[in-house]
Image (cartoon, rainbow, N blue to C red):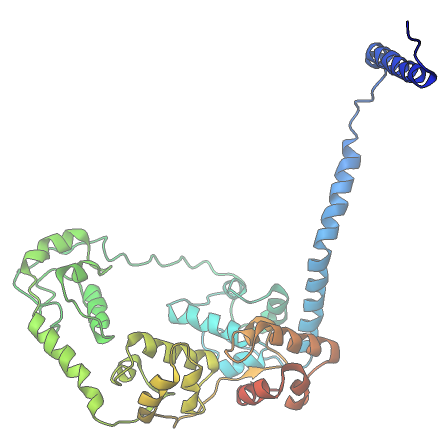
Length: 374
């Protein structure tokens, strides 16, 4: 019989010891005491500390904004005002940004009104700290008990037609809408749609009008007759308008006037006006090249029809306007707006436009300078 050498004996010994340890552990582990007590208060404290760490940056940002608003309003001479009839210049003198002014104007243009200071506090874009500065000067009561007027529902009440007859919804001068059971408010909506360049080419187009209920359309549909030849001749006439050389002021042009130029449809016309609103007004017709979709070859064909006569620019105040307001301008990127704001916070008010030279570069400064004010 062959006797195992010393190395094999040592291996057997190690394996035996391991087996013995495993056997002992199997029997002893159930008798080892385990602390199942969960320290909830300690866990909650750790969670709160973690949340405080997450909110630290937001808190610092809020404190910086509070200091900035305090510094801004220390330089302004506030005065009593009624938010229902304040002018844009008055709003700026009250420390409001162009974005805030636009929000207020949109609210008023849609039929809104301020009946109390509380109404003004709820306007989108007005910060709480800002409202606290302005509240003592608002010429309105603190709160209002006035009940909100219910929005008119065109489809809620259907008027019974007095006399049904054949009609073309495109011809508002001839059609007697009152006889057809169409109310004055509905008539106003239809006329406004046509005045803006809309057309009813099919009965389905008339049905899509939100002021016409399904019940009304079902009654009127058999009497709708659209003169398609008249519409076609009008379209043909419109395509010939560009044969005459005419000049349009870019700062006063409407969508209808822009569409008279061959090569410009409704889409391009809307972009031209949208760019005018975003940039703050045209200073030269060459700015049309900055509009998406107007390539050099298109510009060469249409530029003879445009000029810039009335120049009344909407300007950005680099000492007061905020980052998002600056970044909305087509000539300023978000990064450049951030740099402008950061420099203002660290170094105070701008005293010259030349301070922007090293911040946004000469090219951008030359384009944006006419739209800036201190």
